[in-house]
Length: 248
Image (cartoon, rainbow, N blue to C red):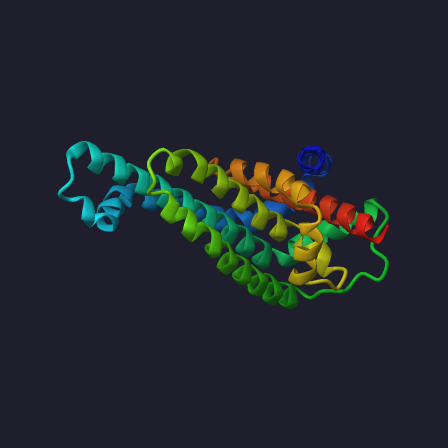
């Protein structure tokens, strides 16, 4: 619990850092703007068609009593909506960080310089950041499907599908989101996705403490414009903390 709360505090520290530097906040908000509009459009479309989608997925319930039909189709709708939100959030972060690679690399450099710098930092071009971000983001989205698909199926279970499943989806989203948020600081040290996963596995509660508030707050329309840059700066702080701890 202590590490989880520490992760939340680092998210709060990220907010404090950007509050003192509105220019960095603006730079971090620009890449999130486009992907936010796209994400909200997709979620609105999903919400509009969710009833039809639930009917399409549950033809076996056509002959059931009205009460059971409603129960199973609501359960399916909630599960599908939650799973899509989890995947969209991870994909949203991957696209935002990939497209905004040069912006976030600039932010990471400024933040880390104020904290003592990064000896021997790797000089990354915008093109290289884009390729690395998209490649790693795709891998993480595919890996997330290994968890979200079983949870989607579990969403068919009455009660459990509307209580336990959403909590597990939130935790899965937070974990993969944290892996995305710490990407650039690791890139600047010449470390890729494999190293990020190995390091964060030893600090799982800390990662969840960072990723959970970001994922939940991003569900608020247009909040991602502020939350994403804040979460990224929090990711810089988490990256420095876990790497310093592992080298100690």
